[in-house]
Image (cartoon, rainbow, N blue to C red; front, side):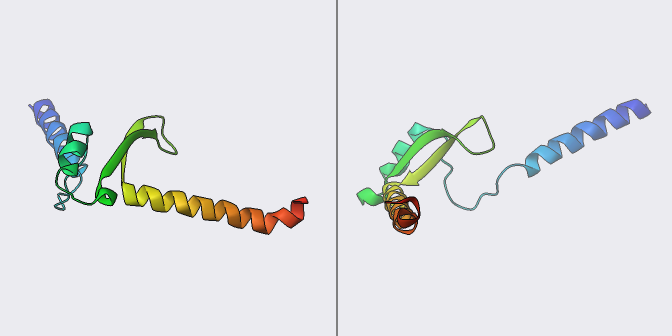
Length: 98
């Protein structure tokens, strides 16, 4: 009898713990596949607001994750990377003889 109670308690606690791992519903639609991306993109009018999603291996994990950015975010990241590289070249160029 006690074994059944303990088994039942473990199952209930496990299920309750799994529920806590779910992200909260904050009103933002979750993008989990390309169909979700396409559905979202039909709701926005500006090209810079269109989502572009890729499967990427994020740092610290070998499991690819679905990473989504808007076209505008991708453009800003690309511009920032170019500026950062140029700043490094400007700062380190004299030190390395360029």
